[in-house]
Length: 604
View (cartoon, rainbow, N blue to C red):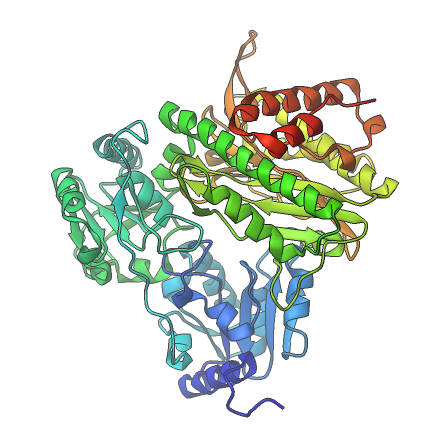
């Protein structure tokens, strides 16, 4: 029996409810967020996971005085239901539109005249209006100035503080002064002479610095305030090597303590216009700005600037893809040998195998996200993660889905491959082939320069839609250069808003990863990274096409060749020929022989 005072999620929520009663709060919103609105959170800000026990990377917790619920999208529903079973926290799946239905649910808990709360220090500015409107509609008071989680989290982890380092000169293909000038030009286009940056990848890209404060992402906790002539970097000075601090000063950037950002915002001159991205700036920081400072809400200029990779970054990434591909070939060769020998192997072993082979590659820093290795039914959960408590042995017959990536000094990788284990059913091969047809269709597409990225999503889905099939996640996301594995502003998802900032441009790196998931049976996803490159002008304007960057064989044992048309089969053979040509020089022995065998032309 659980001790009454054990530090379980139930006990934590009980303490939170006691704090809510002390402050007169009827319902509390706990987003998956930090002061920088990051995707991957330092331990200090993993409040939703700490309170609920659900460790998926996305989800919104609402705690009332009597009821609580976790809101997740379809990628996480099965995982959340398993992890929260018996917890007293309901799991509510979001609609396909991802609409924030938790707002009305939370307001219903409070009732007319009640008080709802959220820590404004981790709430995106863009979400504040919806909360304020709902509170007014339901005649509620909204409090954004309380951090009730901090009041009950006795052993809350400290703020991370890893040393910072500068990228080698020329690594990005442009220098810090040039990048600052580009941002200031775009500030002026918005008639803004001040700009606040809190998103960590934007700051790291702009300053040419890297850190290790956040799992899987080489960034560091900081804010950056750019003025007309000078900029202030809010980061603990002890983390800056002397030469880096001197170089920043030479470029007009002054280091200030991390916690000094609020005072600096209060000091922004009367009548100033400050550019802030409402999706990447917290409501708490907006609150400290003076009422006489006009806030211009727009996408951070650096979002588009860093999405378009420089020739130097592209060249380094192509080399990185070769090394990553060689590591994957060695790992998959070893996996095939182990399965053929009926050696005991589990989903947990896949991560160990991949990490060992990637660690042998030049420039490897670490994984770019937590490896997903799901066999059969576990593969049907798009964001499944094997744990010591819950994982499957890879044995018998079925489909193994492996989604992994690496951070290298020359770029970031993200790849998904399917592995046939034993004998596959015709239905499994049909699913894997139809998903592959979608990847081939989008990878081989030509499209107008500047088309809004969400509009391309349907190209990959069409082979599935033809059979009444679909998947709940997007088809692709932007990928950073030795930065966030997920970045914007472009992305392939018909559910996303196709606004002007999502336009496709040459130099963008994006994933192509259609999928298909049959709950409790198997899941399929293939994923490559592609680079948008010019495709010429035939009299109807400039067009773009994709160059496939990822280099790793596709398991032909998963494919039903009869379902591929001649062009699709030719694409597959050409892709395997390129993989063979570029990776064979990096391999020897069993791995080289394995690569030659698995990239042989398709037999139809």
